Image (cartoon, rainbow, N blue to C red; front, side):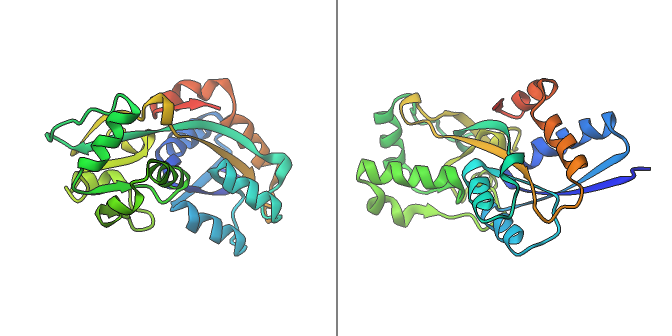
Length: 231
């Protein structure tokens, strides 16, 4: 039976990855149990700020930086886990638009009857890209915003979104969608996801052991299988 229990909160982008990482860690450290709660990134940060009893917080690095600045996670415990790129998907069986170049991607966005993208860090960057292209107002009526905790991939699978953008990790293996590729290199959006010890945690040693595991070379293949690269 585990003698140590750690509570971790994360955004949805790393939910599947963390499930596998926790399973691997539990096999290696059976005395430690890590329970993971995965919600929308904004909600996760709010819950940490509200003082909920989490030991570990795993979010986009900029969110971790903000939580460190406000004293809610220990800045010196920040551990970069993975880098995650944005992919593009369409409902399974529908035509695959050309997205090989920035110009082709822009044309595909303009042609799509409905669009969807994450409300997280990658979505913020994507919205800035649309603004830079000068099409933000034109496409605004066609954008379907997923409710908190709902993946863009699920909306694509239901046919509610014709062209969707999300972390590749959240698209991988989802039935009912075709992932047609990543963003062109010139406009690719890469998010670093990090983990840190919540300052309300009283289990600093056990937390550090898990954080060290998250960054260890032995996790690299698992991270790649989830469509991410080691940070």
